[in-house]
Image (cartoon, rainbow, N blue to C red; front, side):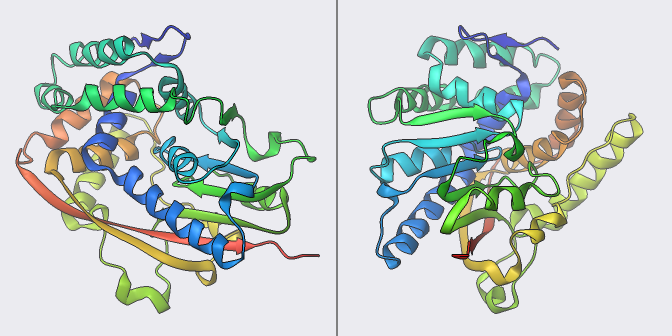
Length: 324
């Protein structure tokens, strides 16, 4: 399947269109990252400081841009550095930072035109307000409040110069992007007394916080069953998906580092909730977009179109670097 080219030569596919749809319809990343920033502000004030004076590096997953936007709008940081570990995250950020209103509209129009054989997906991508929302987000990113305050670069933690030292490193839904020793590598860039904080889905359930942790929508029986069906279909077609939560994050952050739980309700069409979960799972498999879309179309065909409700539960973990 072909791609849509922006004026800055960035190419976007239909999968990016659905990731942006999922972000728009559910607000999962925006709400989670805003709560994360509020928590961090309180944490720093408790240490007699402010975020304004910190040198911060961020690494974000599929919600890239939400944490960075919230940090800049909620603080007076002169600048923020953000690392795009995957090409997909780089494309999303450059879309936000450089895309025009006309390009946003044409991109979603292009994506809809690629869904003639997927009426259910096409209907979702025609959601009212989708185009205007992302036009507004691009305008915010290109406004005087944000423009020039974020330095975006690609790579991995191992590509950062050893001389770079940060007060804080923040991870948002980035656990699947990090390889075995990436977390420990990031800790090496912290100054003594600095801290690494992460916002992530529940990959372990700290005993002390059990009563504050409602079940996530993604862990409900219908979603688990749909994921398993898609996993089986992916394998039948000769592809492999890696949708499990990586255990090696515990090498850097453990249950003992858990400091808070973020939980909120999501009132959104059932199809949009499910399509997001399945899309994110399928992104772990390197397959053509047309095959991915055919599977997603089949997966939601029997799902009611009405509104539903789900719950997202996230952990905030924080580890401080000693003074030695």
